[in-house]
Image (cartoon, rainbow, N blue to C red; front, side, top):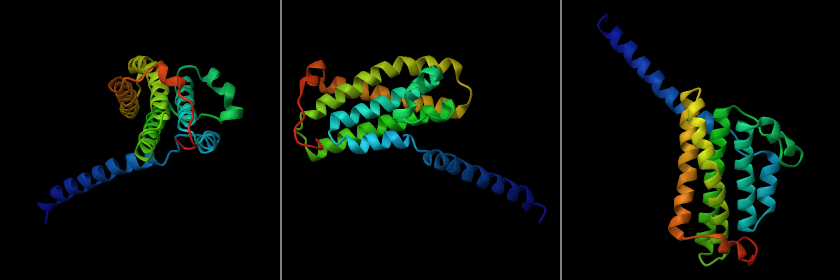
Length: 184
C-alpha cells in the first residue's frame, strides 16, 4: 500500500492541474466583454456598418482604459463604465474583435452581395491597424502569464482582421457604400 501512495499523490496532483486548466478558461469566459450600454448599442444598430462601429468604439475604449484610464472614463455616461484588470481588458478586446468578425461573417452568409460587408470590414480593419502597434507596445510591461496570453490573443485577432481586409482588397472607397435594407 505504501508503494501506491506516491502514485496516488501524483495522480491527485495531475487531476488538480487538469481541473485548474479547465477552470481558468471557464472563469474567463464568464466575463462580459461589453458594458450593458454597449450591448444596447449593438442591439439598436441593426445595419452591419453601424454595428461594426459600436464594436470598434468598444475595443478602442478598452485600449484607452489600459493606456489612459482618465481619458477612458469621459464617455462612461453614454457608453458605460469600462472595468477590469489589464489582463481582463485585453481579453475583452480580443472578444470584441472576434464578435465583430462573427457579425460580418454572419452577414456574409445571409447576404453575400451586401455592399455593407466591404464597408464594415474596412472600418474594422482601420481600427485593427490602430490597435496593432498599441498592443505591441504593451508587451514591454506585461505583469503575468494571463496578461501575456490575453495580449497575444488580442494582437493575433487584430492582425487577422488586417490580413483579411488586405486579401479582400477593401479600401476607403468602400466607405461610400450606402446602406441597403436593414440588417445587411
